[in-house]
Amino acid sequence: MNNKINTAEVILFNILYMFMNCDFDVSDKESEIIENTMTELTDEEKKIVESQIKDNENIISKGFDKIKSRTTEMGKLINETKDCEGIKKSFIEVIKAMILIDGIIHKNEKTMFNELCKLWDVESALEIE
Picture 1 (cartoon, rainbow, N blue to C red):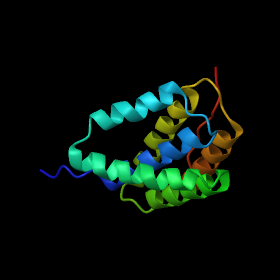
Picture 2: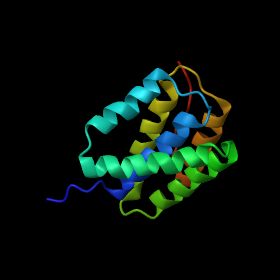
Picture 3: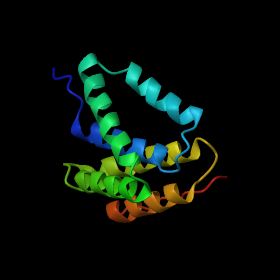
């Protein structure tokens, strides 16, 4: 059995990381999600994710436009993935949960979320009830 982290998971991680940081205010709950995810990874997977974090931090340091283009770039990769329709629907819900977890929808989150929905042709409303 192959334990390598799959491409779609890496892409989702990168997208979530961009969403988590696009308002430049990472909440404790958002950090907790990343930490919990890391504890479930093998050492090899941790190395992959840690290198992704380093790349992502570099992008984040360059501002929102770079974050947004990285997210769109990752979204396009999903469009090229086999069986991407189901992946997109579930990813959108995971991303939505990440956005809503701190109880605040930042305009940057809304912008990126709407762009991903359009890119993936997925309907999903982003509202705090």
